[in-house]
Image (cartoon, rainbow, N blue to C red; front, side):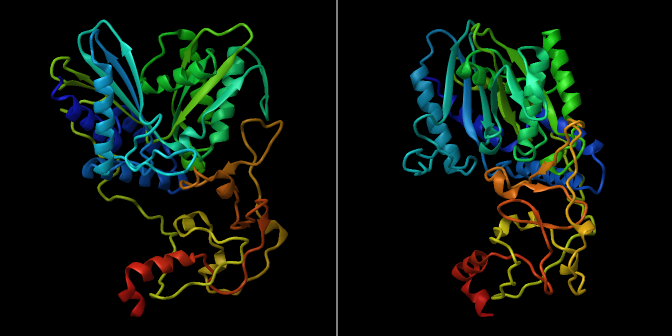
Amino acid sequence: MLAEFFPSILELIVKTSTELPPDVRAAMRVASNIETPDTRASQALNIINVNIDQAADGEGAICQDTGMPTFEIHVPRGADQLWMAEQIRLAVAEATRRGKLRPNSVDSITGKNSGNNLGPGTPVIHFHQWANDGIEVKLLLKGGGCENCNAQYAVPVELAHLGRADRTLEGVRKCILHAVWQAQGKGCSPGAVGVCIGGDRASGYAHAKAQLFRTLDDVNPDPTLAELEAIVMGTVNRLGIGTMGFEGKTTLIGCKVGAMNRLPASFFVSVAYDCWAFRRLGVLLDAGTGAITQWQYRDPSTPLVPMADQAGFQRTGREISLTLGWGTVARRTRSPRTLPGRRLGLHRLPDHAHSGQPHRQPAQQDRARPRCSALDQDRPRCRLQAGPMSAGEPHRWTQMHTDKPARLNWKDHSPSPRPSGSVSICVHLWLYCLVRAFCPDFTKR
């Protein structure tokens, strides 16, 4: 048997989870360089860059959601695919035990997590036979937040604010724009999309996801599709969605389009959305030993160039410093429901909360003013914006872009008056309970 197959697959999983490929790093570096300094988008990109560097340096997972392990494997004739699949499952379980993968396999009926990323349908393993002598293994780790932003259209179809999408390349372009617009910041932009024109519902999605194995800097061999990719990239990056939906100049770092034949009665456009944590690597293995003979998407002999400058994350000077004593729970804001503590940064604090000035009821002109989209000037609408923790629950964290600080109601997202009183900040009670449970000495002080 292939003595080095298991350690090779394990190394592939670890590297994919902890190290972004060079083409993605280059695209993110370009996005950082062209972004307007001292903006929310620039700030988010700085944090992302530090995160990318720290993950590579410490061999830690780039994102807390290590995604669905999807293996695409090409093997020569006579390869024992059953044995290989079992070794891949063992490698996934070992990577999970080491903390390189998060336990992500959940029973859809009982809701129980298997704890080792193994279960029906997990991991995804696709074998393909080819005429070469070696073994090729490619791995894609695609998280749940961006997976939720996938979309499929049966055209012709009416799209809000875009009109009718017909069975033409213009109709395909409208479908892609609609999918990216719907994703907003919930897909952890800047992202990349793989698109399939045609096929059936199942093969269309599979081929769309297969486009994500192309490098971001490649050129489509089909001139028609290459032109479509360029048009989509130019249009999307003028929408102003930006990093994490915080506005900005980069919404997509890649658009890859493929095509399949279809049935006469069907015309599907399938869109697979991936986030900035675009984790995919591949290896070529020796057919006799299973040892790695060549890496794909990366060159181990080339050192990684740091994404962030050595100073790390730069402050803007507008941060708020909070000092809370142990055992102190700050008074909750007047809100229909308390925001979770880890998402506190998404709640914009009112001006008077840190100014020491008494509260005044805002005038009408101080209320939130929605900003209209550039996608369709004839039929303007409000830009929806979500923060970096919002991928799982987009309906809760969607808020209108405002020029003035304002709060949004939990249910209808309409602007509401600022809370009255002195310093009023939302600190969830469970934070205090956690500290008291695990650090009782601190609360006694």
